[in-house]
Length: 88
Image 1 (cartoon, one colour):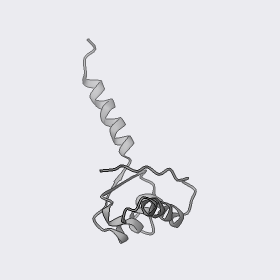
Image 2 (cartoon, rainbow, N blue to C red; image 1 turned 30 degrees about the vertical axis):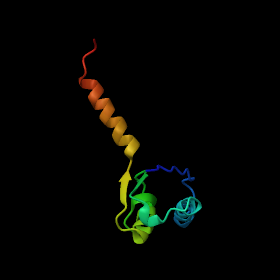
Image 3 (cartoon, rainbow, N blue to C red; image 1 turned 120 degrees about the vertical axis):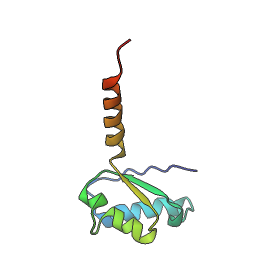
Image 4 (cartoon, one colour; image 1 turned 60 degrees about the vertical axis):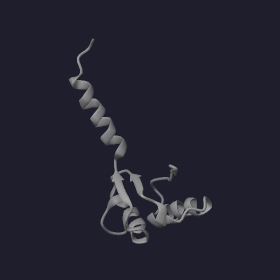
């Protein structure tokens, strides 16, 4: 199992971001069909229902799980968990 990270500028058009992701997979000899998940921020351009990064990726591989705002979810979970812990 490998985890690949790709930092793309938010101002890039969706097709440029999509192509950047495909290029990373191609460079490493990994078919996009091997991708199981994609973690992105919850902007419309990333997870919207029309012409988004999610729609482009799932058109190539419908089984990809797209997880939005993973960092925010982890942060909020840790914050709430920390609030119920007593200080020793």
